[in-house]
Length: 623
Image (cartoon, rainbow, N blue to C red; front, side, top):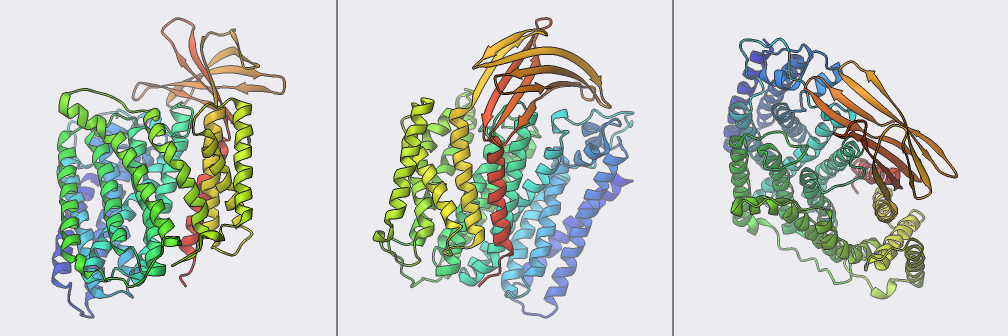
């Protein structure tokens, strides 16, 4: 029954979407008082139908309705209720329903919140957004329908991938989708604004809230995914340049640049074309990420599908949207008002523009590193993987001027400033930062060629953002986000040069010496849980000051039959002790990997501070 309800609800939503596209196009120049009620009613029906469809799928998962193919492929009667529910979006079909639900709800909220804007602008935004919703409805119904029936009905399901059965990953997709889908509203709004000729500071004040909320959710979503990969996959770090990690990072770079550009548009009525292009690019990157993940052409633990027809559909739809936006931009570019505001070389807006160029460079490096292996394989069949050295060699040298501009830009004035305003106090702070970096590098024997300027400017940025809390030059939200970013940079730099790792094959009773530490493999015990068997290793990490007991696990799941490694992590404010072990083919031997990771907790906390700064900015009242 739930299959029929969910399926029919999607078809009704599709009909409503067609009607909304027709009505929006028909009424785009109509100032009728009935316009609001007509569009509002249709949007309400559409959102309700998609919500009913999503709720039907959740219900099918809860009751383990294995007549539903999606439930059969991704659930099991022995699975805990929490993971039955999260399993709804832990697969290709269900995640698309969630994406569609967020699309419709965001449009509904946008229409309500924009009642002080012109009807033409609002209706055009609905038109462009409905084109996206219509495309996703077609994609779901005809290539990825989550309500396909199975007959005869299986007695038991195959189960959800065990590495996805984790609280952080259960909430990671919905949060990330809120960030992705928010970019669709930004995209639709920017196209409507350029057609209406209202790409100005008033529009910037209106759309800035949507940019901020998308940026907040995207940032938190990336954080949740990074934390999950750290402790669940046993990789032992905060970032690994995995292709799907890169897919979420690319729109974040673009959205961060857009967030700063919209501030310039709001304050100075400058960078209109920049703003529109960034709005379009951010959404295009979000859609490109969807294509890369859903098509199955990326080799990653995160990817969902490997059906070529799905990838082709999304690719064609993506090309259509990009082509449509480019045509609209060039046709209506004349509607962008020619601003008469002047901006000088030494000014805050120029510094923001330069920082945006840095963001675009970082974005380009990540984009090339992600898609180059794909094109190479298509051209000559050669399979390669691009790892951290590629990104580090290209990105790290450019971080040096980027840190300098980021440190000085918030101090500059709008319109025009004087280079001589850089006071002696800032110069002294820079010298102190370089001296600290020099002694740090000598102490730890760091031989990297850019180490002194990189660390020096990292500390310089850190000291300046701390000092900002005692000034009145900027808002608390900006101070908090910039301080969080500087803390993030310092934590990463120190983590990168001070982290230590030891790996060895051990059996019960073995001891290994490593950097004044003794690693003891004391015992193994087997524990039977509700849906898996756990092999728990008991280890001791001993040194002159501490005696740590660590218990990593190897979990053997029944449905589906899967083996996973669960790291044991002991965190302090100074460092993490990370231990993971894996079964080897040789009887009685296990591969044991121990890592000492300085300042890991500060990496997570710094991203939380950055996000909290965005939250404060969202609730700040416009002047």
